[in-house]
Length: 293
Image (tube, rainbow, N blue to C red; front, side, top):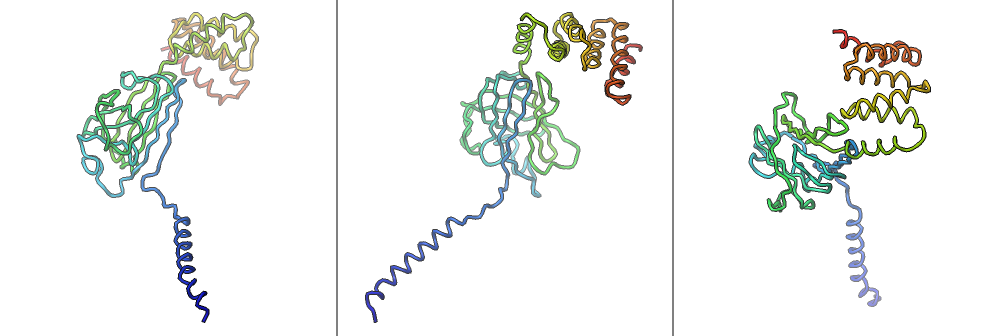
């Protein structure tokens, strides 16, 4: 027998076992997450909002006043604490929040939740929550959806406007509503004024957008009307859209006859451009009907 080879066999098998073990470690299985991660991004006016959270499911359990107790701080999701980021200052239910990233905690209750934004945005769960890190804390209404239970915890935006939106927290049969405001006017209006002050004629599209912004935000309607007329001067392709806006402005100013005339002209041009099924024909008809009552 070759004793030298025999003595080497244990070392060989030991090395082989290490190789197999290492191989087992590298061939890992990617199991699906029990509470999948989600990143929600939404632009509101000129503000970018991002929410990063994990979405647990009901899975046959009682959620609120069950696995999520009433009266205790909740991570508002699963796994890491939910993060919410704002690219500009905002207001949540009237409370000022500077631009930045925060942890979103909540304290659920039957009819009203406490909403908390913490400056400590990087933490797991609510185990390290400290009230000293609170930036804002306020109440938000919680109501029964009276619909089929929502299986997976959901955060979403609705009612998007230039200056506002509604943030919903939805799970099981509970809906929590948070109103969010952003300041778009103080940024856009001075930019419009500066652009209009520059020499030279502007495009009909720019006149239309500027007048629309002023109309939608209840700013100077006299300026908005002048920009509308400037946009119509060269009979642009979008004349029927601009004329509909002109009708709306005149109606708000109390000039019913002028508004009706502009609406009718808008409908005539819209029919030629898009056919009788144009949405502008319907919108103009509705405006005229409201002014004739």
